Length: 343
Ligand code: NCD
Ligand code: ZN
Image 1 (spheres, rainbow, N blue to C red):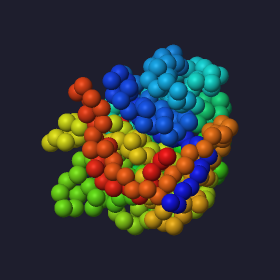
Image 2: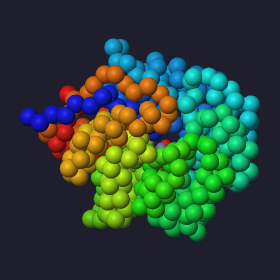
Image 3: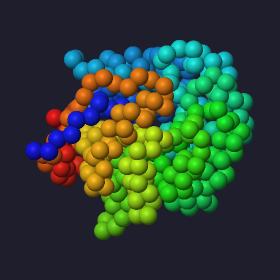
């Protein structure tokens, strides 16, 4: 049996929600990843250091006995965020980054930023305090085609932000297009990107051809094959600007399988295995460790992990659904066979 052993990886983009959903989903992440950057898009959003501390405590309580997992918290940037709060965030070791959602871009982003230039003083504060800015890079204009929203965001906003704040560390989250890959590649070392398993494995046919598949619906939306190929090339290139961020985003199954379903793929139950699948198909398993375990930690200026995990080429079937007592959540690739299994 072929196996591959990696330094224990981290997930640099994760949604775990709260309450019963948190308790259901967190063990799947904790068994694979040592740390994760926790997204702040709760209702209401996590906008203060005090809220981040409270949320971190709730997450810690949900880590099963005997597992060791560290949540790395983020703040949700709004027009009402103060420079004093960002200074406080930079001074504590709880908050590791601040997330910018354009208003209305995705799940729970109503509190997001409407006018990006208006928050330039906050971006200047982040640059001064050396706190990374994480960006959901999509415009939200109703008249912009959903397949163009990432590319247009880069042209209209990101290029200007990067030029205006050259020392600001920026992660363009869950990139989905060749344009995003090119932008990140040609920017300075302060600009990096996360890549999800769904965007490495699927193009938009997986969402729309032969029937509509709500569990493949996430934002940014899956793109054409040429874009998927560019993402795989970036992930497997060994370029440290590209690292693992699952964007695992659980929604209750009835809220996905409905006339107007929520955006988000719940990839946590098979996250590392899904990446292994994508890297194996590209004949690049030797590049998985840097992508999954080194480059993100280096970018966030955190120590690399010391333990290891082992994947074996041993086919297994993803659970059709996880959770109990009214908390049913359908994983990405539910009921499908995967070739790599975490031992
Ligand atoms: C995320 C969620 O459900 O919180 N959904 C998604 O499709 N990715 C929000 C996000 O990261 O955009
Ligand atoms: Zn996300």
